[in-house]
Length: 126
Image (cartoon, rainbow, N blue to C red; front, side, top):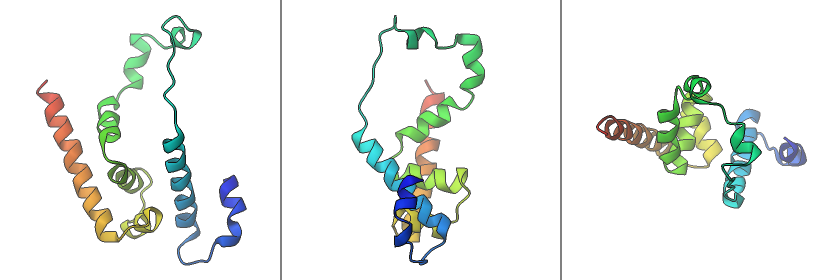
């Protein structure tokens, strides 16, 4: 939100304000992904000891396989699927947020759904 506030003078009204905000948030997300470092902890560390046991975690991982499948998708497919299904954004707005043509968004949605389906079929046969 700070980035959006700082950049508020650059809003030109070519798209909706929400689309503009999502574009800023998406760019921040990409920047964070690029600079992320892998953090590890010892099994004896306080962080590892505070992880819930089997009973508590069963309800927490209700959609674990779906998230695993989503995390394996290429970045553009993942972003398109999450914006479309989780944020309920129309294709045209997703195209503006991701700065790609609407046809590409539709292709990413189709490919993403196919990849998730393939992941589930592979996972079921294990």
